Amino acid sequence: MYCIYVLCVAGGSQGLPITQKYGPCSGSGHSQPPNPQEIFGRDESKVSFINSKFNQYAPENLKDHTPNNKQFGEDGNFLVDVAFGTPPQKFTLILDTGSSITWTQCKACVNCLQDPSRYFDPSASSTYSSGSCIPAVEDNYTTTYGDKSTSEGNYGCDTLILEPSDVYPKFQFGCGRNNKGDFGSGVDGVLGLGQGQLSTVSQTASKFNKVFSYCLPEEDSIGSLLFGEKATSQSSLKFTSLVNGPGTSGSEESGYYFVKLLDISVGNKRLNIPSSVFASPRTIIDSGTVITRLPQRAYSALKAAFKKAMAKYPLSNGRRKENDMLDTCYNLTGTKDVLLPEIVLHFGRGADVRLNGTNIVWGSDASRLCLAFAGTSELTIIGNRQQLSLTVLYDIQGRRIGFGGNGCSK
Image (tube, rainbow, N blue to C red; front, side):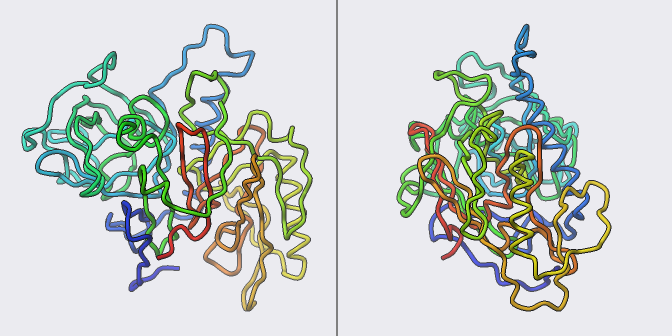
C-alpha cells in the first residue's frame, strides 16, 4: 500500500524520533521501497553474516582464531536524527543494535553516499578534534556490513547532541571518507547501539548508565529512542536477563544482545518446545534483522499451530518468488474481520511478549498474507517485525532487557 497523504502519529512526548526508512513519515527522501524479494534477500545476507560471526566460536573453529571486531551486520530500516559539533550539524543515521561504531559522511569524501551535499564539516565546529579520544584505539576505522557495504575514514571527537537536553562532549565517531554500498538516499551514516567499547551506549555510560530503549514504529507512525532516566521512567515492563553469547565470558561483553527464549504459545496454548531447542546456539534481539528466525523444530511447531488456528481461511496458491523465505501464506481477498491468533514469546524470568497483527504477519496484499517467521539451523534471532510498536529497554549494567506494549502510542 502506498500512501500520498498520511497522518504520521508521533510517539511519546520525549525522546529521539524514529521513522521507518521507506515509510511516509521519513524525511529521508525515499519514494520507492524495495520489493519483498529485495528485502528478503538482504535479510538472508544479514542473517548469514551474523551467523558467520558466531560460527567462529564453535568448538571446531576456536583454535588459532582471532575475532574480527570491525565487521557488523546492518539492515537499516529505522532512522534517527542526531547532531555533531558546535554549532550543531544535523544528520540522519541508521539505528543499529548490531554494531558499535557511530559514523557519518564527512566533507571531502572520496566516495560519497547518495546525498553528497550533506556531510560533517570538521572545520566548521569549534569543538572538533581529529583522531581517537579513547586510549588504545587507532585513529582510522573500517566497517563492513552484512550486505558488503563499507565505510572507511578517520575518527574524530566532538559534541554529540541527541536532544537539546541530551548533550555529550568528546564523543568519538567515524568521519566517513570512503563509503560504498546502498545505505539509501537521505542516509548519512550509522548510530551504533551495540555493546562494544566505541558504541554510543558505552561512550555515554557516565551520563546514561548504559540504558536505552526504543519503540520501532510501523510505517505510518513515529517511534522514539530514549536514553538513561527517560528510558527507565517507563512503567509496566517485563524483564528478562541478558546472557553471555558464544565466545564471551562473565567479564566480556558480546556485541549482540543475547537472551533466553524458553517457549512459544499460539492462541493461548503453549507449544511445550523443549528449552534445549533454543539453548544452542542461543537467541539474540536484533533491530536490523526483519524476519524472526527460529530453530527448525520450534518453527515447525509454530507453523502447525498457526495453520490449525487459521484453518477456516484459504491458503495462498501464489508461487513463491526468489528469496521468499515465508512458506505459510493465506489469500484473504474479500475476507472481512480476519482473526489472527495471538503469539506469545516466553523468555526467561517470566517475560512474556505478546504479538498481534502486524507483529506476526507480513504482506500488504490481501492475496498473500504470510506468517512472519522462518526456520533456521543456527542462531535464533528476534527480528524487528516482531518488535514493531513494542517498548524494548536495554539495561546493560543491570544485565536485563525489558518489554512493554504500545510503546509508539501517544
